[in-house]
Amino acid sequence: MTYIKALSGSLQVREEIAYGDGEDRRSEKVTHIRLVNGNRLQPVEHVSAGDLFAVTGLSVAATGDGLGTLTEKATYELVPTLQSKVIYDAAISDKDMLRCFRILDAEDPSLHVMWNEQLQEIHIHVMGIIQLEVLERVVKERFGYRVQFDEPEILYKETIASVVYGCGHFEPLKHYAEVHLKLEPGERDSGVIFANECHPDVLTVNYQNLVQQHVLERDHHGLLTGSPVTDMKITLVKGSAHIKHTYGGDFREATYRALRQGLEQVENILLEPYYDFKIKVNLDHIGRVLSDVQQACGQFNAPEVAGDKATVTGRVPVATFMNYSVVLASFTQGRGTISLVFGGYDRCHNPEEVVQRKGYNKNADPEYTSSSIFCAKGQGYAVSWNEAGKHMHI
Image (cartoon, rainbow, N blue to C red; front, side, top):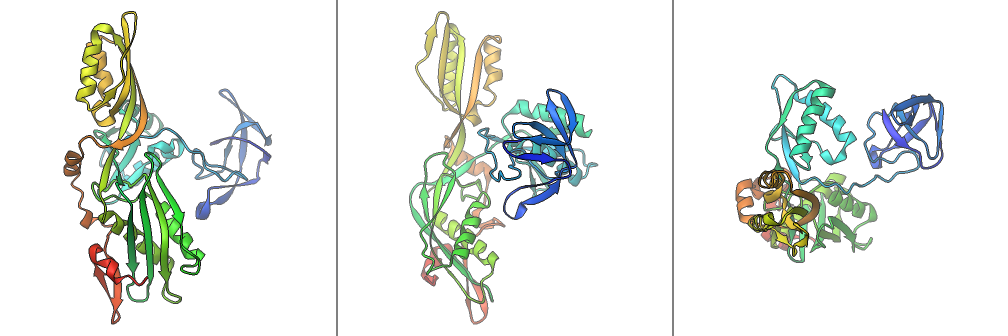
């Protein structure tokens, strides 16, 4: 069942309703409608604006989808900071287990369930250890499978320190595309923003739209750890196509190569998630708390004292503090309280250690390369990123 709130209009049984966006937009027939009232579901033939109801018949609707005339997708402020691998019995097929987690992913988009083809593993994004314990129980109760989760890892991101221009060319035999991008560092937690300064006389609008689509269609790998790049404004400056030999996929290749070539030329910065914390303890424990925050590479404001209690707020890396609630409960005998709220991404406190541990080889990434492909005498040949600029056609 898909639970819906009607914002306008009306809906009847056997009526078709559209949802999804772009190429994924579809229309499906509503087979049953049940009006929701607390825990009661009352079958009805018709609902209208303001009603809360559940329908059957929508096969792939996900939490946050707009239906009918509402095409926007809801955005959620809850941002997972950890990634964990799903561990399950080898007798259970990967396909069956992935199907179960796809259902949970539709109900909670923050899980961001992924199938890692290279490692043949299922990965999920979570907020903390407690969520993993809850998921173990949910999977057992709903699907009958016993699962465990690997030790969660921090979700790192990458950005750049200064403005740079990147160019990419893709011209094997009977293919052609060239893209020039301007990469600029953005505000922290601003994500990836696309802008367009290319004149239609230089590159037609349909190809410009392809470049925008390929910039925004996925998380792109950074050079340090292969983590997603973020906090960056990417501007299409110019591009080139061929009237006979250009196909849609050519601009994906050229765009990815231009982005990668730009990253090669500039200082890359590793980012990690931070918590905004609030801790309340007895006065005799405040010294221990402040010492722990400093050792965790965090920062704190001056403690506020009220009677025999002290409250301290600050900011600290998730990596060093995600299990601190257990430590706090231990030395305060459960009398201390802690609140941890995701506080965005900032510079990593130990980038060299993380890069070494991740062991990402930027030259062996199967999905990305900074080299460009040119053609001479009917044959394509690769040109490395540091030489590619000299060979560009525009």
